[in-house]
Length: 402
Image (cartoon, rainbow, N blue to C red; front, side, top):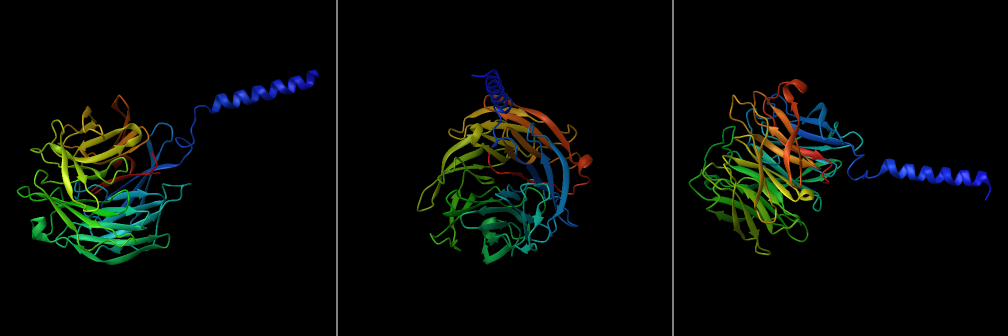
């Protein structure tokens, strides 16, 4: 072999080795994506979606952008529901509690902090919508109303905008145990809505006034995709303050719920039978020291469920399989007021907690992981970075892949 050929061969091999050295262990599914977090400001003068850029390397937030939802918020409506802002694929879904409407956005993956409102905000046909869910299989989103006209309204979803599908699936006030529109705050009595992972049923939680059982509303979905207008109602006496709905491990039978009341254990596993859709309490889970264990952030990649209290700055980690408490820690909060979280989500190895302290609102970012105590890495100051927020609400992440 000539010396020049040998030199070229050595050069090529060194180049290949160097290329592998600098790229390993980078994984395109973990890095290299534009990421964003979203919540709403709940302004009664005009609701806005607030988008925040997420660092692909350390999970920190920056560069906030406000985008009108086309509807009105309800200032002071804090800590009332989970899933008031939902990301699925390249869609964002929000509800506007101040004028009883539903909004759809489309995300450009190249610039996720500037989502575009599609069409107009549409009526939810009820009062005080608090939660929304989406089925990609059915191309359908459904909003849960919790006011004096309570119930569920669904919309067919496309890139052209939402289209109403049928009327209001009414929830009688006799079952809400209240005959008037609920005031802003935690007394709103229907709290969360979710399709199961197979899109064969739609679920909604309904809390009582504390003296009566909580209710789980379940709407069967036909093989052709028709959502029943007649619910199967399950009474759950041990869960009067039924709140957050969370299907774990894509298992339609494994439903994790919270029950945020200081005299309650705090959470439970429910078993859903098919095809009857009967629900039963499988296991009651005691959350140590809980006052209002509302928010659930499920991280299957970390084999963990994080539960955030709305009344104290506390994060409890449990096993999604057994419900065993595996850790507990606190996050930074204003010591002058009693405050906790107002929603939460996990993205990769970071937990995003929306503070419910209206005097000093922040997004708390904590690094989390297997056998790791959650550690605060950033306190994103909303007043300083975004401006006055009348009533922040909801937390969602793009992209939704873990």
